[in-house]
Length: 398
Image (tube, rainbow, N blue to C red; front, side, top):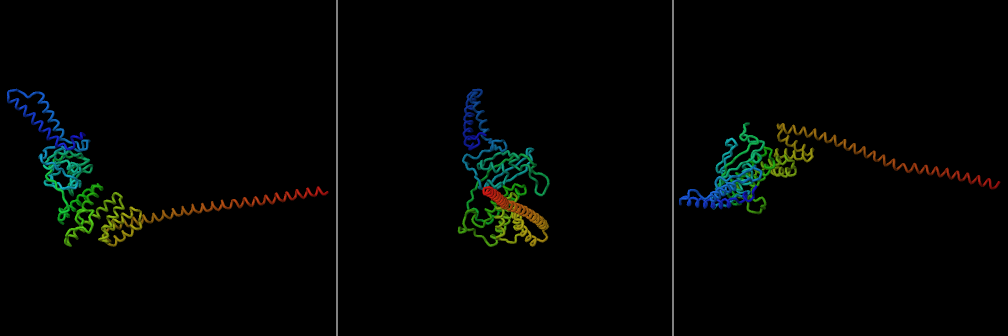
């Protein structure tokens, strides 16, 4: 990928366009003065400039032909602003399959850059656009709907087949940086929070759990009952909400925490999931979904007995829930198996301990046997010496 052409190419395009205009003007003046054709050098330079201009309008974003941006209509010369991550943009876009079938068509669509509210390929290209620019974006299936594709809501028919490439035409209409003052409205905060949550649910169903977790966390940023700053302290100015508004945000927030915990369980992030579910249980100690998910977390952390206690409580709250009854039966079997395995392990450990004790006792007794043999040998040697001495004395005297 030519980095010079892929970064800040609009300034180079404008320069080349002016050069091309000058060359064409000279050629036209010479033709009007009676010269039948423009000089070959001027014609060649003009064609070369047009080719360079066309090349600069096309950008291979990743360098592997999987995401290509082509400028259809340049932004006005006084428009230099490009959106950055987190800013709100307004766009028009249409998405088509290779056969020309329109699969997406949005007018005045608003989204936050970097929040996966459009397909990944478009989300990656948004920071490259200027207000007023119209571009065509060729998106490989990897950065579209992948091997899963996209089905119509509630139907089995595919809207976007698996592994299908997409071509978008997108126009950037507006960019807005939102400060805290823009987020004081209850309606705005709930609108954004709900939109992030629903998009997270979409990715959860597709088993794209990392993206879902990002969006659930973004939803929580907006559903907080403070001023929207995640680092803000409670002694700062809070939102002025009615009791009903506060209760609504709280309920929405607890739903998001519950969903976030379930998603974290899917990737075995049990410590993070435990923190998420505790947010719910602090406000609603008998929330059956939160209790059930905490039970799943404890099971994942190898605390089977703790999981059984929680599921027993859920079974009391929802006696007709067969899924809970099934999981509870499974946990009882698992607990018995663990208990049996634990007993076997202790027996093996005890058996090994007894063998070690016997070996130690044997080693301690062994020196005693040797000592008794030495004593007997000493007695024998002493007796023999005494006998020899007695014989010698007898012979000497007689």
